[in-house]
Length: 411
Ligand SMILES: *Cc1c(COP(=O)(O)O)cnc(C)c1O
Image (cartoon, rainbow, N blue to C red; front, side, top):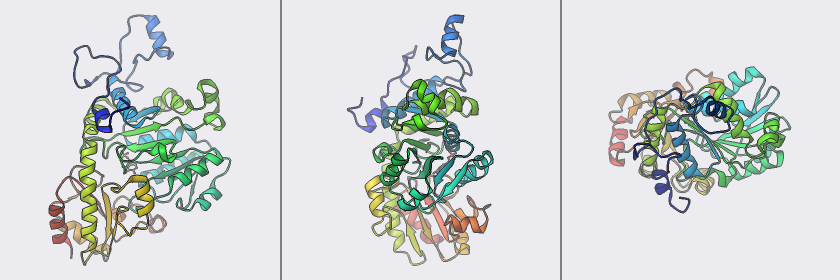
């Protein structure tokens, strides 16, 4: 299968075991538990000597098939599917962080990720070091022997900042720290995270993969590129199963079982279908997004447009080198004031007022008053969340229809 294109591989990943009825699509195994022929078989499965399923909090055939597809199209060594992007982020960091450890990241983070680091992990003695990830010298200064990860989002939202992944990976390699990237905003068909030095990739599959906002889901992809033998949390496991396999081993045998947020079979079924059409949806949505960004630049009442695929954008070169000419289907633009943004939102007729990204429908949100609404003004300023910004997630409508709606809603 490796010789075939992304589209061929995503559609034709074989099952681990043949289905008894030769079903052409993977059935939904709606079951919590699995029966065994003998006590010996049961012992073998529970002790990890066979890969038979035992309980659906741990593995499930429908979910495993979804994970296999992700492995097939990305080349990742280990894939774990969970019930939200936040579950993927929290499970990953819970596997490597410890009291006294620190995580080096940017203040430009998804709201719940920021809160998870500061409030949740913070309570267990894990320090978060915020710095400018686009400045390698500053990153280097923040990394020390207790740094357990450099964590970033590949295009930050809503600031749309792009760090140089290879530069961060070099810093990580020198210091023995894994580079962990949330790549939710750019899908696998255009962005090969491992080739830029990402060791662990995290995706909210709620977005492009779910196929039109059908369900929430999250993925952890381990490329097997990091040597965990010196990791405070993973050195024992490294000695047992090898330094490359330690992270996924601990994730599958301990962390995700204990935290209990495994993907459900219904969600895996919907997302397996979703990923079949992802690349064509993405091509259409991202092309519309670029076209729309260009058109919006021409409109008088729009102060500025932010899309890293626009020539002239400060991150255009690094974005193009990492993601190609169509870096996602999300853009932001600024109006004169917060009041102008509210008036614009209220006048929209076609575009939906909703959070979420990469639905088939175009969605608009005013991030400062919603996603960051409960943050203090000081925090919003520190995170560069501007109260004059509107975020658009571009769907499958035509550029003309979207422009018509935007023009009629502008002051
Ligand atoms: C949506 C999102 C998340 C969280 O994913 P959920 O599936 O909502 O838990 C994390 N990171 C980014 C960049 C996102 O867009």
